[in-house]
Amino acid sequence: MNLIQRPRRLRRTDALRAMVRETRLTPDDFVYPLFVCEGEGVRREITSMPGCFNLSIDELVGEVAAAHGAGVRAVILFGVPDEKDPVGSAAYAEDGITQRAIRAVKREVRDMLVIADNCLCEYTDHGHCGVIEDGDVLNDPSLELLARTAVSQAEAGADIIAPSNMMDGFVAAIRASLDKEGFESIPIMSYAVKYASAFYGPFREAAQSAPQFGDRRGYQMDAANSREAMREAGLDAEQGADILMVKPALPYLDIIRAVRERFDLPVAAYQVSGEYAMIKAAALRGWIDEDRVVMESLTAIKRAGADIILTYFAREVAAHL
Ligand code: PBG
Image 1 (tube, rainbow, N blue to C red):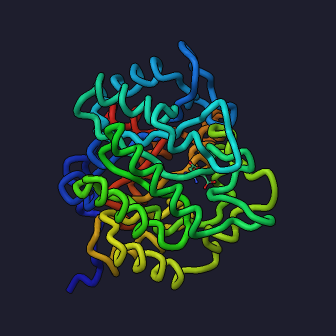
Image 2: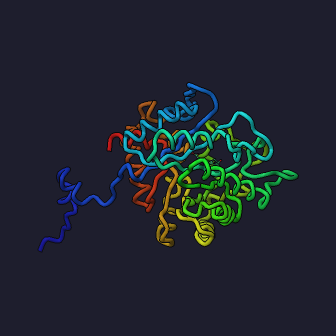
Image 3: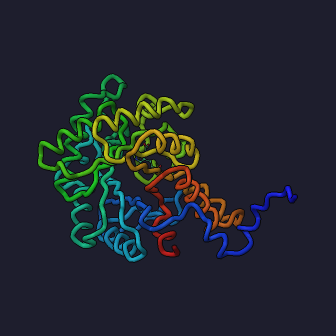
């Protein structure tokens, strides 16, 4: 009797490996994050994110059209306004940078899904995700502003609202306001499980949203906790979230898997700016094979249980899938 089991039989050729492959990426999986700023003809590369740019609306529309041509079907927009104030007025202004960008993209690239990130940190002069009193981020007063922001984003034509602010009760507050204003069909993709992560560093350069004092540990989650992640996801599901997001992605594959197993909602994972920057930096030095590391990382995120992946590599990867 032959006691040796031979799993290598199914690895012998490319065709065999493809036949038994369990996880496949498609362009449908991806959401492409983009940063939109004031001005015209602006295409300013983000130092810590080579290949990513602050784009003025005209350039943004071109980038979205190119991504669409490559097969990308969804973008998430982050506004970088010129003027910031303590209450983040530019986040919910009818003619705010994000609102104008949403309108332009929906006008020019009709069937691209436009997701609006919903937060105040890019719009407040102190860089926190809510309003401040005596050095504290106030929860409930921030909810009102976030809900107003969501309505203004929906009015501009956003297809999905993605709140990333981590105030308690943000999904319920946004859902109620959207419904009241007649946007009951607009889904909420909640950043349900968002850790206070050092991997957001490059994003804060891109969005000029670094907190001017303190940090975000009073509202974003402690990296050490996974039961708490289930609690956060459960609260958002109860409050009416349509999609649950985990963020960052690769350092939190266990959390993606746990959310996948516990909940029946679609799960999104955000491969964040620091994950992107690390791959780019090593690749630029010739230390790793960028294409293969990107595919392996994205496959791992999907294998862990993500249905949707937000990634700065979306356009590139979609083009060669
Ligand atoms: C806004 C927001 C952040 C990211 C997405 N939305 C930054 C933060 O919370 O500090 C990070 C995305 C990335 O790093 O790519 N709150």
